[in-house]
Length: 383
Image 1 (tube, rainbow, N blue to C red):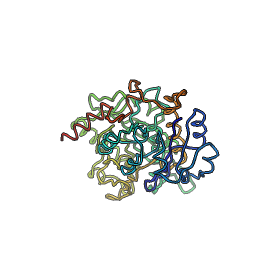
Image 2: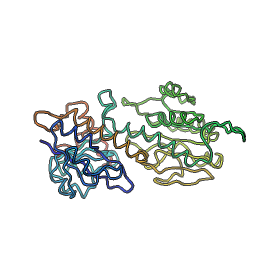
Image 3: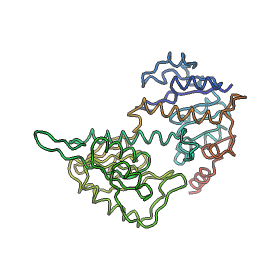
């Protein structure tokens, strides 16, 4: 019977967790032994007693928990110093950011630890119930609108009052992926006048279905990856996009940027000269601030003012709604583990021939087995 360990998140300000009592009951039902680090759910007001009642064993010592686990599940990856406490062959499941954390991946390989990077799950129908990247991004879209509202000096909807009419706030969302579409939907529900843009014309119908206007910019030929991510534009296309969307940015009260490229640094979409033309008191929320930013002048983890415009780059957006974010992430994890759980052996076998496992397993048996990550890290080492 495999022991599945769930860790308390230790990053400053992180309130989410990777399992709820209802998930513990489900893990026990399929034959797993669940061990939990004490205090795991304290930030969302779930006590150790509630986990114990659901069937989990509570352990205070993290080293003891790591040493006894067959599977370790968490939101953020383990610190490298903690990997020494994990026994060889253990499977680690978390957001690994494998494109940017080469040193950590090499350590996992050298320690002969297996690892699943949840953001590498393929975006196919079979994986929708496991897709933690999308579930957290959807919540991020909602939170970014609320952060924007909190920093605006005006209301979003049109209001007819005895003192006069208040015009609706103009919101411009750049990027209509999961986060962008949720931001559009949220802003529309709040009564804002919403315009959106994406380099993939195929999403225009989705934007329109939410009641927003789609900004049509002729960029020539654009494409998306097999998993639905936008591909990088040429320098010429970027120049056209920046020039044409600048008019909409300057005319907007709230701008939300959600453009990220899978495994690459996000594109800079809004430069200082455009910010200088925006109305004083306008707000920009930069979803990508923690990874380099879509906006010149945004600062990861901070709210700053540039030319009278407030730029919100606080990041870790889903953490603002930690209870719901934990529920969604915990469900994604359970759906992933239970999908491949072997009921007879009560273990989680690693079948690299499976299209899902083969895509999201990064290290296994002392090797980097993910071809995309292996090539990427080899190029980094060579350079």
